Length: 453
Image (tube, rainbow, N blue to C red; front, side):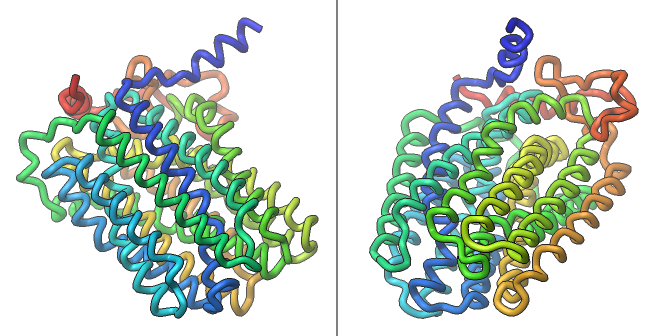
């Protein structure tokens, strides 16, 4: 029992108190996201009569709008502080979801999704920059892993609750979902106002520009890789799997909610152990392994839709979702911390905005193309996406050569340094081949200056 207790204690990220307050607010907000996300396309199609293709295009429009607003949000996070930007975005999203019950035509959906896109485009880069500003550099992997954990716990609970509430036979049940989501935005705002401080702004914040970010070809390529991963994996599983399960495999709403929640449960259980596992290991090999895991999960979704229906299909989708969650934990431990480590201190907001915008770019292409496939050839969608993920795995391995040597490996949170090669290096696909240096001291210094109190 002692080794088990020691291992469990080693998973404790030991983060600053301000970070835990921020994560608590994120948990509340994630619950609201879990309540609405699995049922948005079902709401548009099955309740409001909007075609699956148009519903997917509306989701893509939301992401396109978020892509545009995210650039400005990154600049504002560097100039006026990410906390202010985050609070404004939460208020705007509350308005957008307050209007969702008014949708009656496709144009109503597009208009409201544009407002939602403006707000969500500011939300993600601001939240990421705020977390980076409150966390010492060597603890960022743990901080972002904990963020992914809390978000997925919230989404799991929200998805399970929504499955008990939503019913296409009772359109008013979807209004209840939207009201719950609005309440979580308000609670997150309250936490930010009362418990989360604003990190100190960098003294050279007025000198940065997006041109400098664009000139960093490594970061641009890294963001492009993430965009393709998002389009061919997470966007499909979040946006289109519920509709695929409902309309192709004839899975009922409660089972859809359970399948959606299982992804988050898997991430919640595995995120901290995986974050511990990747310490001292090559980041891009981790992303390559993630692409292979996601390809396997997507093929599982195809098999469930091709060979089973109803409850049997729900069971297959549930298994595929748990496998997919394992890949998500690798993404949560690698993607945002590496983006933060690549950033010069005065451009952290913009670099993390670009990292967040890569999600939005994926959410443009994924639902738009996926919605078309879902309408005309639903079973072809999943093996095609699996092939794209395998291609991205190869891309990740090729990109490693372009990363600065000092950031290729996830640092250990206790020392900020990576571990030397272990005896498992020859068989472990994530293992390192050498001991690398810690992240640049200037970034660690900025993290310390950014903390207040």
